[in-house]
Length: 198
Image (cartoon, rainbow, N blue to C red; front, side, top):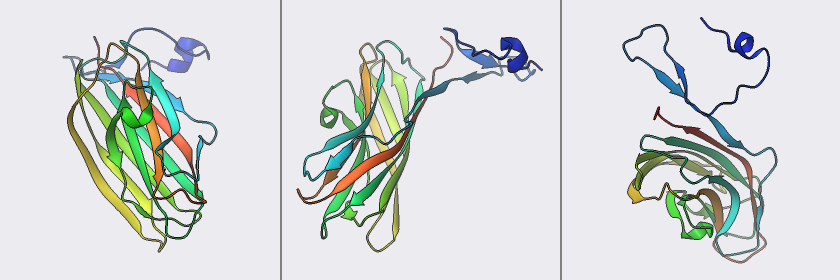
């Protein structure tokens, strides 16, 4: 079995081809390995006292990077650090080629619930590219409400239009119900991308 450490002599391995693991079985039994495209190392932007949808975190996928069969896995958490009365919060994951986050396709959205300090939303979604112009998305998103309940919902966005020939944006956004004294911030945002062999 090959040892990556020995192969690279302790250096990072960078190349422009898909890495493939055969597992010794042959006959085309291969696993194509992608990698982590993004992992925020600090908190994202904070949604402050606004009843407009605001972008907290973003990752840009370069043009002509995605192909039919590409999978994009997005994981994130947003946390409420200030809350006002019975104001509710909606967290979304959006995907598309628009530079304005709220114009991109909503592929996940949580239930609007009353927020108290320390409430959080966790998402885990997969965007599956079907063709150069279509994709689907599925996964889960949750939210903790003011009573401590954990609301988890399965998400599925059926076939929607994309354009792989231009840059695509993955956005985590938040939206409070009123323009009150509310604060919410992404505390983690991770994006993994795997492309099939081309």
